[in-house]
Image (cartoon, rainbow, N blue to C red; front, side):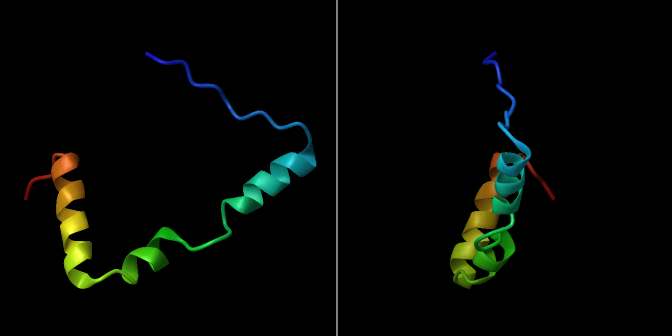
Length: 55
């Protein structure tokens, strides 16, 4: 199992800048809603199969 290294921050300003960068740019929801309906359905089916979701 690979070891995971925790994020390390050099200062409070470094932490703050990385924290605020999480909320910049397009969100997943806004990007996902702008997709074509057929492509969005295909993505949802693919993710459901990959996650072993059944109805």
